[in-house]
Amino acid sequence: EADIYQTPRYLVIGTGKKITLECSQTMGHDKMYWYQQDPGMELHLIHYSYGVNSTEKGDLSSESTVSRIRTEHFPLTLESARPSHTSQYLCASSESGFPTDTQYFGPGTRLTVL
Amino acid sequence: SQQGEEDPQALSIQEGENATMNCSYKTSINNLQWYRQNSGRGLVHLILIRSNEREKHSGRLRVTLDTSKKSSSLLITASRAADTASYFCATDGEHDMRFGAGTRLTVKP
Image (cartoon, rainbow over all chains, first blue to last red; front, top):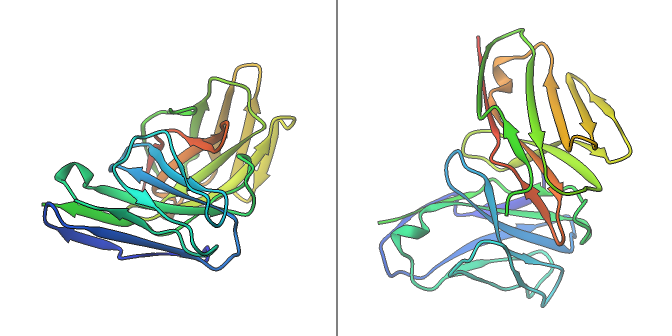
């Protein structure tokens, strides 16, 4: 099991609420990622970071924002949740910034917005 | 955008049989990786094959890569019920890795 953690594992919340999904890793990895995945579907990269104070948007447009103040921590925030945000969110990290690096995934947060 | 595409989308076999999944991709790559995802969990790295390699083994896993056809296959031999999961191929993109939609493997006991 990789040393990368996500909380909460499951979240059911009402429309309009602000939420933060937590992701932390203890491997000292520089690069971190957030993916969105609907059940049985492909992963879509929504944010990534090369290191502290670095954040980039991924391929899939997302209304979420991220921050990277500490190497080990990469939280994702939704200012106003909507039913269209219902999905599974996966956090991952890799040792370096090379696209060829193996990624280590957290267990995911399953978000349901009512 | 998606780089790798797995085929078939779903595969159901009996325990003890071999399972073969295929992945096709569009642009040249440095390496290709296979990941496994149990239901409702994150992905776990299985194996990496570099563009200059043609075949690689790891336990009951055998991966092949044909760069001329831009395709790879994952073979799981002597499958077990515990192998039931989704399997994804991933290729390196410009800034990150690109994952396909996966093959859903069901191994019946």
